[in-house]
Amino acid sequence: GKLERLGVQESVEAIFPPSELAAFLSDLPVDVSVVDEAGIADCDAVVTRNHFDALFEVDWIHSTQAGVDRFPLEALAEEGVALTNSTGIHGRTVGETVAGYLLAFARRLHDQIASATERRWERPAWDEAFTLPGTTACVVGTGTLGRGVADVLGSLGVETVGVRRSDDPLPEFDEMYAIEALHEPIATADFVIVTVPLTEATRGLFAASEFDAMRSDAYFVNVARGAVVDERALIDALEAGDLAGAALDVFETEPLPETSPLWELDEVIVTPHAAAYTRDYVRDVGGIVRENVERSRRGEDLTNRVV
Ligand code: NDP
Image 1 (cartoon, helix red, strand yellow):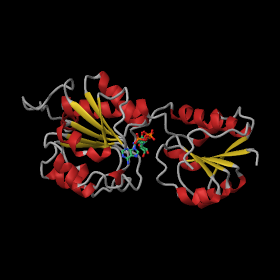
Image 2 (cartoon, helix red, strand yellow; image 1 turned 45 degrees about the vertical axis):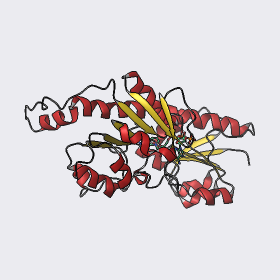
Image 3 (cartoon, protein in one colour; image 1 turned 135 degrees about the vertical axis):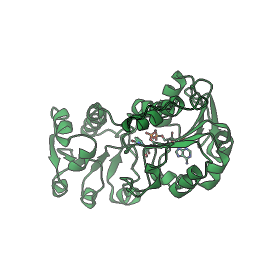
Image 4 (spheres, protein in one colour; image 1 turned 30 degrees about the horizontal axis):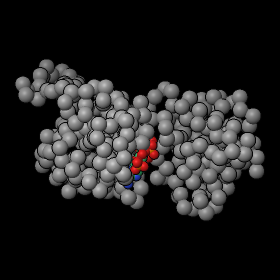
């Protein structure tokens, strides 16, 4: 049927106020309103962060996130529900966040901020601080996030090595490896940065043998999804000194439980799944939704379609 009622589901509240997106889209020739779970039933299409069973009844779902691992992809396909995602908009935000982590480790900022919160005037040891030019980052996943990370790190003088399913080169990366050869580039990198989607192929991709393969003075960064990493194996490697540290935006359980040892480790930076946050998020997601409403009304294929 023709798209007439577009709902902005309240779960987008985790990223921005739903009313802001509804206002941004209010000039479209469709009825746009904020809907709770029950309100989904009245919509032809819904913009949402979370999955609800009521979504099986709509024609089109737009995910405000790039990762669609929380949606039942096969069941949606069987029911003929289209699903689009928000890939393409997080390159610069996540790139700058990752650069921030690397700069914190290199310039010891996390340590000094931690000291300052306790009013301690404590300088790094003479041989702790370093600079980024000449270091190497291995970026696993070379899509929007991976390229954004490589672009920002490249401008800071970091050598970038990409890992994807093929070893076909990309202009943002100095070198490229296929995923089968993962242990080669992670064995030499100063930083290993995970930017792959969570799929059956990437679940548990980083476990004990990967942390073994990495240098003991290397840092590990995960801005993808928690389940790509065996968190227990990471904690063990960090506690044993087999890694220098880690910066983590995503976790097996979110919010990260208060009892997690990750909160306590000095060389671990924990951020609350906020690597892509920006005050421009409404406009960035809204641009994709607007484009697809127009395409839908013209009877054209949707962009960013995953199901
Ligand atoms: P893209 O689809 O643009 O990129 C994913 C890349 O991963 C592809 O280019 C693909 O490269 C590569 N890839 C896929 N499967 C494999 C595999 N089995 N082995 C190696 N490489 C693989 O997605 P985005 O970059 O936009 O997002 C990536 C993920 O990051 C999302 O799925 C989401 O989970 C997470 N994310 C986290 C955010 C946060 O706030 N922390 C924000 C946004 C995204 P190729 O096809 O060449 O193999």
